[in-house]
Image 1: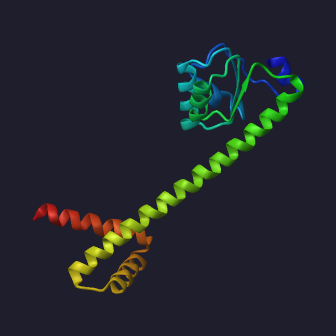
Image 2 (image 1 turned 180 degrees about the vertical axis):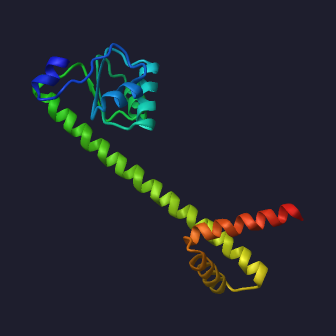
Image 3 (image 1 turned 135 degrees about the horizontal axis):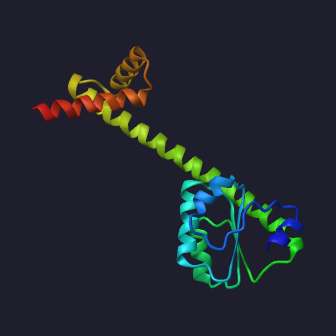
Length: 178
């Protein structure tokens, strides 16, 4: 595998006999891509890849002797970007790695977009709840409560959602004292 990678123009920074401490090893050498040559990906190896995907995401390519559907599915769920069965001709190594890198980047972009969407939804939920508090406390319409919350945020130099969060904390503290 090492010779095939080097023949395709890759720099091999580390060769390890197992996937233990994969995240620490990858961080230590600052690997751009992780290539695993495994006869039969074990549960421990897949768990190491899952931890890597969670803690220090990188494109991971697995070359495996076996490719049972459940193994492939488990590898993909662990964050593996490419799973190649029964070896690979040296001339095809580079294209497989390039595809894995592109697939990884696309997946990361989708994860980032999902995280932004979730954050936006959480912010909106907090603002809606805070408007409800203002509507009850001050007997305001929804539009009036929104403007009041905006003014409070501007006066304190806060983001609207941060001000809403503060208002909700004050409301909870008031209820706790009652």
